[in-house]
Every structure is written in structure tokens, then in C-alpha cells.
Length: 255
Image (cartoon, rainbow, N blue to C red; front, side, top):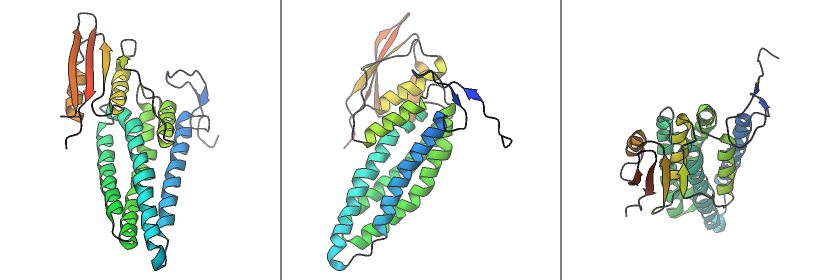
């Protein structure tokens, strides 16, 4: 087989019991990468098409408006959806936290570019900024596909097919259904934190959820302080001896 050994593999627990062949089209990691690549191509193709337009003077405003609409709607929706799904899960594990921090830094820079496009006074300024967006997106998207997704595949507790389904839901304007209680007592220890951080990332400002655990989650508290300082609330509702309940919330954004 061209020196490559294909092996039968069972995916991590995620409500499915399918058997797949690793590194083939049946592998959820391969499927996820293909799906994400299609999303990336669609976004970049639309952006490139808009920036390659050389409109007559009477059409410049339409081009500027189209670029602003694409950036503030499609691109910003993708950045938000990716943060709430793929980034949120990876941010809860020590081995991927720095990667997510780097990706979020680039995403913040892209968000600033989007603001510049929306405020551009003419098509020339909007197009120039949009080209800077495209230059930033190319390596950013590549890291998501070739570094983040493989890392999530290896991360305990990360359900990649479910994450991609959630991403697709958000991109299509849907709403993720979330429970107000996250009970991790039956989840193996290495899989708990990604689940909890994913749930936190999906909170809107002012919302909260209740974590139920079988021990005082002090290490989790330290991770929240390291990754979300000043952005969360932590309230003990029940403190042992056999069960702990902590209400974790997202603080309203500061004006």
C-alpha cells in the first residue's frame, strides 16, 4: 500500500460506534480537514473575486458595499463560529493552549481589518484592506487545517465530527443547543477540561452554566484564570464532600 499502513480504528467515544480506516476518506479527521478546506476555499474565492474587480466610477460604491458586507457578515461569522467550536475545545488543554492563543491573536487582527473595510470611504481603500485580509487568511487557514485539526484529533475529549457539525450549524445561522448543567463525573479526567472550556466559549455575556464534579476543580480554576482572566465568574454552589457544583459564567463585555 505504497509503504503506508492503513489500520482499522475506532473513533473516540462520541455517541457513534463506526469503524473507519485511518488516513482514508472514512477517517473523521480526513473528512473534517476536507470540510474545513472547502469552507476556507469558499471564503477566499469570494474575497479574491471581490478584490479583483476593477469597477467603473459609477460602480465603486457597490464594490465597496459588497466587500464590507462579505467581511462583516461571512468572514466575521466564520471567525466567531470557529472560535466557539474548534478554538474553544483546544483552549481547554495544556498542549494546545498556546496554539489557540496564536490563532486568536491572528483572528483579532483580522477582525480589526474587517472594521477598516466597513469604515473605508471608497472602493480603493476597501480593496486594499481586503487584500491584506487575504494575505493574512492564507497562513491562518493553513494552520487551522494542518496544525489545529490534527491536534484536536489527538486531544482526549475532542469529538471532531461533532465540532465540525457545530461549526456548520453556526455558519448557516443556526443556534447551538446547550444544557445548563455540565456533569463531568462519568467522563475520564483527561477529557473533562476540553468539554468544559467548549461550553464556556458558547456562553453569551451574562450567561452561566453549572459544573458538577466529584472533586474540587482547583486546577480547572487556575486554567480559567490563565486563559480568561477577568472574563468569567466562579461561584461554589455545593462544596463536597462527594459532589461539587460550581456556577461558571461569562462576564458582560466591558465598554
